[in-house]
Length: 192
Image (cartoon, rainbow, N blue to C red; front, side, top):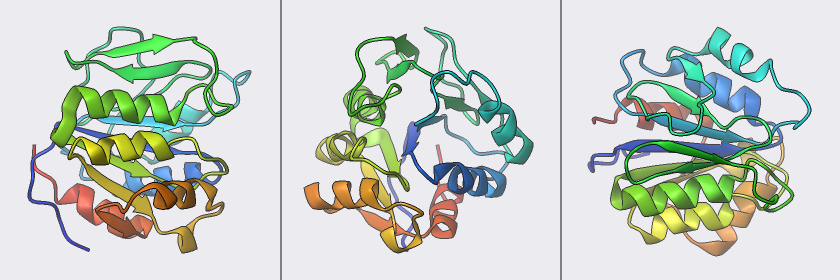
């Protein structure tokens, strides 16, 4: 495990099946003074509107919010893609929400969140893909890699369901493949 030396402006984390416990563990160990905005794009049940934000906030060292369209990214705040909305990161550091068609059977689409962060922040974006049951997010994190951003894939041996990390690993070689506790160490070593 190696702490990246480059500076970042955003961290985008995507996950599906099994990711709630991993995201909870990451957020609970994150430095309360974490200096960057975090975007969380997790597959969720579209007809269940509440509970996830509250559950994450009970464990998190930084605030977790569901953004509204055009909300601005804030350092040290995790923005969770709302249920049944795609989340896009814009060039002006705002969030756009959309109800476009599902992508990879998902809305929110991790691919869309990652790809928009890649195009908006290029080498200043860090993408982290976690446990999950489909291939959503694989193309998006590859886009972050292609724009010279930093990419981390959860070690498939530590995943509840390894389809999502494996799909990413078939497309490209990430900067690091890490266990959840090592992901936390990387994040806590970042500077704005």
